[in-house]
Image (cartoon, rainbow, N blue to C red; front, side, top):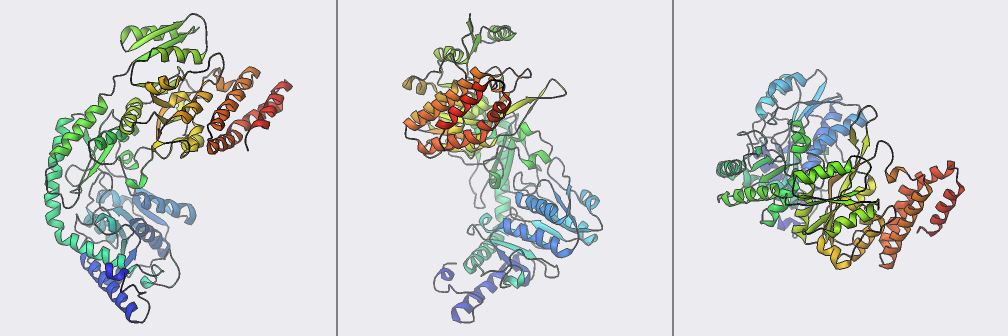
Length: 622
C-alpha cells in the first residue's frame, strides 16, 4: 500500500497519470476481493470497517427494498443490533429476533418460521464474535432464497478462517483489522441486482453506493490481506483448531466448574470462550494480565460495560454467570502449544476463586433491633467475624473507627448494615489494587428500593454522578486527571490499603451525620494514585420505614450536618488546590443535592430550614 500513500497518491476519479494509476490499483483490489468472495468486481464496495459495512448493508438494503420486515438474531454484533433498532425507531421497520439455541446456533427451521411475505432482509453473523459459533450459512441462505429474501452475512469474524465463496449470501461484510490489514478498512459485497440506498451522498463513487474519495491505499491493503489469508486459510484453520481443542480440554480438566460457551465443535478455529461461575470475569482478566496473558470478557466493541453480555443472555445463561465470561482468541499464525496459556488460565481462575482470605469486624452500635443477635451468631459460627459492642450509641463514624482500630489485613473496606456487597466485589477490588499498586479503588453502586407490593427490594440503575466517577475504568489516576471522582464520597464503595489510612492518620468524624463526605475528599487529595472501575460492587438499601439518614433530610439537625459536610468537603478540595474538583462538586451539588432540598424548604414549617439552605448557597462555588 506504500506507493499509494506516496508516489501514486492520486484521486482515482481524476483523469491524469497519477489518478489513473490509483484507479487501476483500485480496480485490481476490487477484482482480487471479488475472486475470494465469489462475486463480481462491481459488487465490491470499500468501506471504513465492519461497522460501516453492516450499517450500509442493513439500512441500505432495507430502505432500498420498500418493505418493512427485518429478521436477525439477538446474538449479533452491536452494529447489526443498533442498525435494526434505528430502522425500527425511525422508519417503522418491524424486527424479528429469531431465537438461537443454547450453543448460539440459528437452525434453518427457526429461520423459516421467522420469515414473512413482507420480509425484506435476513442479517446473520456467519460466526459469532463472542462465543465463536459458526452458522450453517449455506443452509440459511437456501431457506431465505426459497422465500425470495436476500441474506446478509456479517463475516467479520469468519474472514481468514472460513470459506467466503459459494455460500449463497447476497451481501457480505469483512473488516480489515481481522485479517492483518490496517484498522479503518472494510469491505461490503452486495450483489448488483439488489437496490441499495446509500448512507453517504455526494459524488457517486463506488457505483453510487458510497460517495467520497476512495481510500486507495486501504483498498489495496485489505485486498492483499484477504488474498493472503485465503491462500493460507485451510492450513491455518486446521492447525489452530487442533491447538485450540487441546487448550479447551486442558482448561476444562483443570477447572471442573468451568463451562465452554458456544457450539462445542462448530466454532471458529481461533476462539475459545468460557464462563467460570462464581468468579468475576474482570478479576480473571486482571490475574491473567499479571501473568502476561491478554484476553477479554466479551466484545471489544462493548468494552468497559458492566452489563452482562447480550450474546450469553440470549444463549440462556443467567446474568451472574454471563459476567464470569472470558474469551480467548488466537492468531492465524499460531504454531506452538497453548499448554502454558491453559495452565495460566487454571492458575488465574483458581486464584480468583480463593480470594476469600478476608476478616470482618462487626460493630454493633447499641442497636435496639436484631442486629446484635445476628452479629453474635455470625461471630460464633465463623472465626473470620469479630464482634465489637458499643454500650451506648456513638454513631456511624465511631462505629467505623472502632472497626478500623482492629484491622490487621492489607486492605480495608467498610459496609453498613443496610448495604449488600455484590458477589466477587472484594476479589474484583483487591485484584485491581494488587495489579496497580494504587492507594485505593472506587467502584460503582446502585440503590435498592423497597418493592411496593412485597417484602423484597429492586436495584435501580447506576446514577449519572456515580457513572461519571467510575466509568470508564482508570488505573493510577489522580484528582487532577479525574476531578469527577470527587462525586463518589461514600465509604462503602471503596477498598483501600490499610497502610494508607495509617500513614495519613485518617479517621471518620464522630458525633455527626454524613461523616464520609469530608473523609472522602481527604482521601482524594492525599493519595498518590487511585483506581476507578465501573463494576457495581455494592447495593445501597433504602429502609422501608424511611429511617435512614438520606431519607431524613427534612429534619433540621440532619440538614445542618449535611450542609456542613458538603461545605467542609469542598474546603478540603480548595485547600489542596484541586480547583477542577471544586468546580465539579459545586456543579454536582447544584444539580443533584439542592433541588430536593429546595422542594422541602418550600413547604417546611420551620423558617430556619430555608435560612440554613440559603446561607449554604451563598458559599457554594458556581
